[in-house]
Every structure is written in structure tokens, then in C-alpha cells.
Amino acid sequence: MALPWALAVLSLLPLLDAQSPACPNFSVPITNASLDQISGKWFYIASAYRFPEYKKEASKIHASFFYFTPNHTEDTILLRQYMTRRGQCIYNSTNLRVHRENATLSKYENGTEHYRHLLLPKDPKTFMLASFPEDKQNMGLSFFADKPEVTPEQMEQFYDYLTCMGMDKSEVMYSDEKKNLCLPLEKQHDEERRKEKERSETDTALD
Image: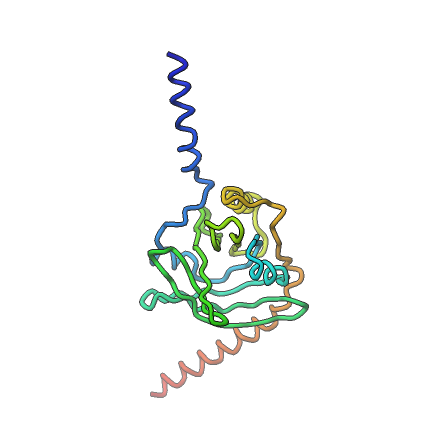
């Protein structure tokens, strides 16, 4: 009796492994709740890319943070990004498209639509974006958190997903918050928005 039981357990192991919570699920549709969860300010923590173009660009980033402002009706996300690379701060603002059923976000750039799979781990203070997850030669995974420093547990979740996809820790590139040069520009933009809001409120009161 012991042998058949052992064989039955062993036969279930691949199934249990496939359903491991450590493995990312790329097919979970994006909902309004998903969009609300990723709304706000985020910091780029680390990434691993095999697609040459993405890997090259990621290697130039010293630090980056950004703001997501989702629009549920239009299925878009306003992205305001501050990036430190090559010793200077670069700011850009653009709209991402939300593909709910495909669980992807996309950005149109240089005549090409670039897609990322949105992954929401158990910790709501983090999220990840995967590229080409089924392509071993070109796959990639990037990790974001609501603070520039993450806990060992949060980092481990990223490593678990990375390993499950078939990538290695040695492929990871990390950000360095000490090299962040964009805080003055962010402060300037915040002040400009505050003044614009005050002007708008004054105009409304006069009307």
C-alpha cells in the first residue's frame, strides 16, 4: 500500500509545483481594483532583461521614480516619470494603454507598441512588469515599490518570480537611490501644480 501512495504523491508534485504561489500568473485580468492598487508614486528597484534593447536601456538607469494616474473610463494610465541616467535627470509624461483581458500595459514609442504584463504580488506595496514571459531569449522582469528601499521579503518575492520564469539573480540590475538627481525637479513640478490649483480655485470663486 505504501508504494502506490508514494507514487500517487510523486505524480502530484509537478502539478503542485505549477500552482506554486511563487510563480507569477500572467493571465489575471486587470480590474479597476488593480488600477487603484498601482495608482500613486512608485520607485524602480531592480530589473532583469534579456531583450537587448531593454537591457541596454535599463543599464543606463541609475534611479527612477514615477506617478501612475489611471483613468478607468478610457483604460489609460497617465505616467509621469523622473529618471536619473548618465548623470542627469530626465522627465517625461505619457499615456499607457490598459489591456484588461490580456493583463498588459502598453506604451507607444518610436513607432512600436511595447507591452508589459502587470503582476501584483501579495504585498500591495510592490508590483512587477514582465516582458516576453514565454520567450526564454528575450524575457524580462522589473520590480517596483512604494519606497526606494525594500524589505528582504519584498526582494525575495521578486527573486522567486525571476527564478520561476527561468532567469537568474546574476542577471539583475539594481537602482541606486543615492544617485537620484530628480528630487529638485519633482519639487518644482509640485509647486507649479499647487499654484495652478490655487489659480483655478480663485477663478472658480470669482465666477
